Amino acid sequence: MAFQDFDKIQERVNANRKRKFRKRIIVGTVSLLVVVAAIVGGAFAYVAYEKRNEQQQQQAKNHNKSGSGNNVVKDSDKKSPSPPTPSQKAPVSAAQSVKPGQGDKIIQTLCSSTLYMQICEKTLKNRTDKGFALDNPTTFLKSAIEAVNEDLDLVLEKVLSLKTENQDDKDAIAQCKLLVEDAKEETVASLNNINVTEVNSFEKVVPDLESWLSAVMSYQETCLDGFEEGNLKSEVKTSVNSSQVLTSNSLALIKTFTENLSPVMKVVERHLLDDIPSWVSNDDRRMLRAVDVKALKPNATVAKDGSGDFTTINDALRAMPEKYEGRYIIYVKQGIYDESVTVDKKKANLTMVGDGSQKTIVTGNKSHAKKIRTFLTATFGKTPNSFGKFVLTIS
Image (cartoon, rainbow, N blue to C red):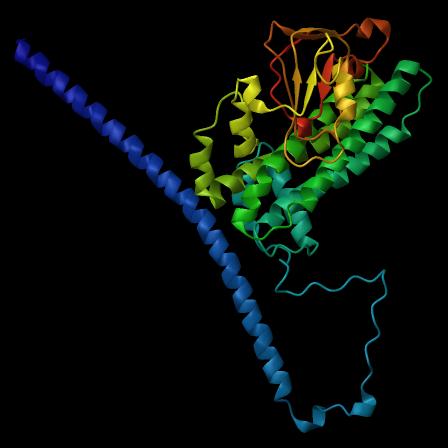
C-alpha cells in the first residue's frame, strides 16, 4: 500500500471525527432549545389561561347585568353580607390561584433540576391542589420553603416527644431542639424576604436565601450528629431526613430561578473567586479579597499586649453592637489566644482578620472526651449568617 493511501485513510478518519463533532454540537444545541422552549411554553400557557379565565368572568358579569326584569331583586329583599369572622378564610379567586391539575408542566420543568424530583413535584402539586396562590414565578419557590417550615414543625414535635433516662441522650435532645428552632428561624426569614414580584428584586434576596437555607441544612445535620448510634437516633433521623430532602429541593429551585430568570447572574458567577461562596454580595466580595489589614479599617482591635481595644476576642465580640449597618471588622493582632470563641447568629456581617495563619492563633481546651458535646467543643464556632474571611489559625 502506498503512503498516499495512508494519507487518504487519515483524511477520511479526520472527516468522520469532524462529522461526529458537528453532530454532537447540533444535538446539544437542539436539546438546549427544547428545554428553553418548554420553560417559555409553560409560562405562556399559564399566562394565556389566566387571561382567558378573566375574560370568561367578565363575560359572565356582563350577562348577569343584561338579565330580564323578572330576575331583578328588590332592595327590601337584599341582605347585606355579614363581615367574615377571623376564623373564616377569604375565598381565592380563579385569577389568583391554580386549580388542581393545572400548571403541571411548569412544576415538572422546575423540579427537573432537583435531586429529589418526584418529591418536589408532589410538594408543589399538593399545594396548588389546595388552592395556594401561584400568581408569579417566585411563589413556586415560596411554596417549597413553606413545606420545609411545616416539616420542621414535625421534626420539633418528634424531638420533644422522645423519652430517655440517659443523660447524654437528654443533652442530645436539648441540643437538637435548639438547632431545629434555629432552622425554623432561617426558613421564616427566607419566607419574609421572598415576597417580591420583580426579577431584579428577587436577585437581591438570592444570596440571603441561599445562606439561610444552607444554614438549615447544617442545623439538621448537626442535630443528628449529637445522638449516639441507636434507636433514638434512628427515630430522629427518619424525621430529619424528610426536612433535609425538602431543603435540598428548595436550594435547587433557587438555582433554577436564578439561571432561567436572570441571564445576568450567569455572567457574574463566572467571575467569582473559588474560595468565596456564591451567595456573598459583590460589595462584601470586594472587601473580602483585601489582604492588607490597614485597608480594612477595623471597628475593633484585639491585642494580648494591651495595645488594642481589647485583650480577648470574646470581649471584642461582646462589645459589638447588636444592630450594625454594613460589615463589622475585628482585627486580631499576632499572638496565641487560648479561648473558645462562638459567634452567634445575632453577630451578622462579621469579619475577623488576623496577621496571618501562623501568626494569629486561636486555641481552646474543650474536648468531647470530657463529656462536652461535639456541638459545643469547637474552638471557633459561627453561624452561616456571620460569614467572614478568617485569616488566622484555629486549633
